[in-house]
Image (cartoon, rainbow, N blue to C red; front, side):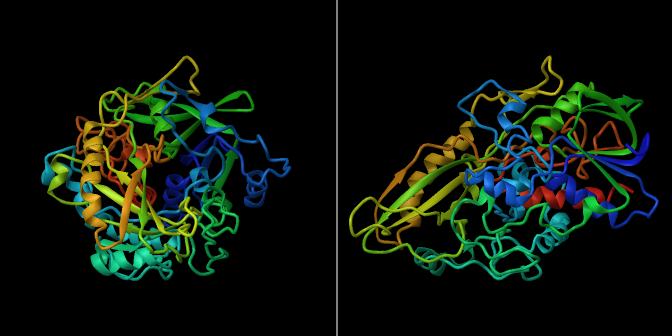
Length: 478
């Protein structure tokens, strides 16, 4: 380290940290001293592609597999993320729908969960900023309010998507996505091969290809291989950040601290540090998803230009959310076929994604190893499970504009790769760990970023929203 004290210490280099730091740097003087602590190491995109293809690369094993970094008490439940520079921007699939305005008012409108302390109209300009920074591809009309066109034109519909869009209009749209439709900012067009976790053509937005220059800024000192495990808390402020690098412990002072790891490790750091907020580590969760395979009578599902062509909102919002979870449809366009001669493409496949609510059985605790949290998961809520049953009752009518022969449902996936909760937002410390600006209710120079702050778990993908929240938080850090 160059200094013993910094104006800002940022933990992590994923979406939450990067967008927070990007906004912070834009408004701070040239004299600012910033330290970024990243547990993992940088692995170039080309080397990640080699590893995915089974080719030799000297970077194999440079970063641990995610399952090695925590203790999972429920082996049937996966918690998926990437350790390394850029965090889960390296493994995400690039789906970027906004939340709906009603998602922020679940208690007021439907009597379930909690309202968010921040509302859609407050987040709208930050949504717009992230969409521009990521060069999002999307349609002109959406079920959520927008004020300007997306940076890129929408991806193409399949023949099935065209029929559904004709019937449902802006309730069935080209998916807003960070997978490029046209070449832009050094990224190539999506090739729709469905291996988005390591995009072989560098089409999806990542921290690595963002061209932000965030971590090259002369005000920023980046240390890799530096895992933060605790904070020194004195008189309701964070005084120092504790981390381990090369088997040696360090303690560095920071005027402002921003935790930008995921919901497992942000909670672990706070609990290790003695945070006594009743909600810290509690309410862990994510959405619940399953595949619906729809066999069609003499209709080929062909076309499309990306992995997920469309989002369907026909089962999403409405008064049913008082009793059963909202469902977002994703029109899957990965290579698939119907196992019948002459009918290979007479089939559509939809990923059905359900919101969930925080429950007491799902939480994070510390262990004897301060680096490894323990994850406890009792299962999805009854609310989410009722959403699945409602979807199965409603989907035949929703798809009645198609020549459907039968619908077959797969078992729910073990993960949607979206880790939520554990440091949720609330108006007061009795309601949550952080306020609407992601500032800790007790330790006012501490920001706790990321999707751990979500009070409820809408079915929409969280990355766009958590990135917008980071921009909003950075504007409050001065």
